[in-house]
Image 1 (cartoon, rainbow, N blue to C red):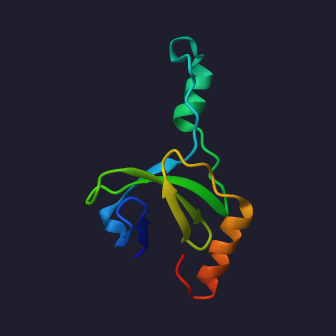
Image 2 (tube, helix red, strand yellow):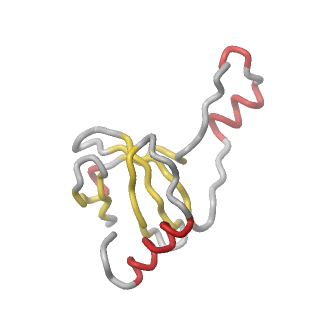
Length: 108
């Protein structure tokens, strides 16, 4: 079972307390009334399905109920870090340091 750190509650909790909410940093069109059907389909359904590092949204449903972002490796299923919604994506070097800390047995 995954332990996921809620960046709002600042606690590591079991994944059963959370709900996966898809890929993070998906930008919504500013003009939804005039978007084409193809573009709406891409927005709603088409995702990268990256093998490796993926930015995801999660919700702490049995805690603070807030959404947050997560950096997870889809190959190892390890979570390198979590961060609050609205914050920028972490840099590649920050992500690499977080994964290296996991490999070394440290918490990040």
